[in-house]
Image (cartoon, rainbow, N blue to C red):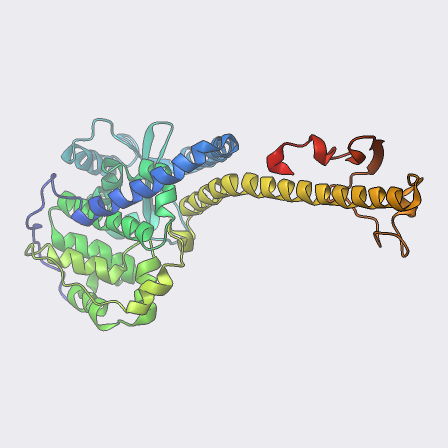
Length: 395
């Protein structure tokens, strides 16, 4: 059996440098992209309508999730799991949270996970019961886990996930920003635990399971990040909203001496193909990222559908006006050749007429004709009117 990783306080971590520099860099890019998107959306009134409409259903869905937690999960407090509550309260105080989030334990059928969310101005942290059993109710490993989730709250990642959703949907940049979040929050967790070994054990439990994970060798597992490379692994890394677990263990090991972790090379072709994969965690399958995907697609549709409809209507209008001009020319020619006006459409339309088949209005309007002494024949459509009454730019 491999000995546990010894106690080692993280080197160089303080409350002022827990968020990695690349998170701030990607944040700037995502903000610019999101502002451009929201600005373009604000131009169209119907786009704003769709934004409010979809935003309402996102709010409603998140509200139902919170209702499920409050009704089905176990709310932790001084009377319910007091040891866990004391540990959570200590971590919140360590990061100076003015308002303590609500903590829930949820039975998840064996899944090892935890998450933070927010609804109507209140923050929530949820720990899955199997992960709690693996870490214990008061341990440095649990402090790492709780610190990671509080890192999301302190960094306002939950709010940014909605407001900056358009920017995070962009390929390469969006996933890189999300991965930087997780790296920063792992540093929050290590700072909360004040033990790199505990942080590594918690991460290895996520990798290898609650029975064998804590006995894995962190250095050997981190070696996979450098040894197992290639096109598909590079593509997986570039399109994922989470750093690979081997990468996360590598970054945590670097906190033992404060030295920056060695960067593993990526295949150049993965960047080319990764540019066609949308961000926002579309491939992760989680409900939150799926909602973001629906939001962004809805926003894009809100802009695209009115534009498409306008182009389609303009095209139909011009096609109808062309039909009217063709019919007017045929009627004028009939009058010129026969010295009298046509009595019906069959006089100018047909196998022996000036027009072989009767033109059809794209909007299924009906054509009628009248004669003016100065202007000649004028054709009118029940849907689009007459070309002579239309504004010059639509003729």
